[in-house]
Amino acid sequence: MTLEELKEEAKKHGYNLIKQKEKVYLQPCVCGCNRRAKWYSAYSITLKCNNCGRSVTGDTELDAKKQWNRMVEEWAKQENTTQ
Ligand SMILES: [Zn+2]
Image 1 (spheres, rainbow, N blue to C red):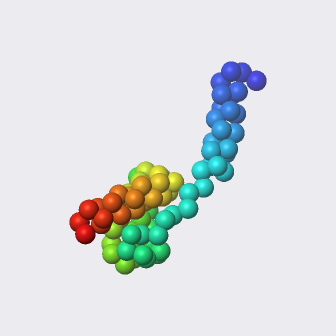
Image 2: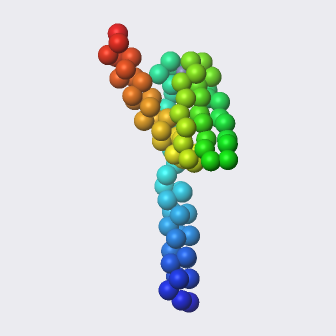
């Protein structure tokens, strides 16, 4: 096995490990709705709340999910400051 092949193997295993570890559960939207529409385009994935229409876009599904959870926190903060 060459060094390049070894790197490839490590990458594969690393990727699998990351994939298993990084299971992201989506938070419900700040509006209380727990259903989202999902759009796939060639370069991005968009998650959009079925109720209020809040949406996030990520490069991958995992990225979109992380963005969603991050934004739920942001939206919650905004709600708190406007009330
Ligand atoms: Zn919503």
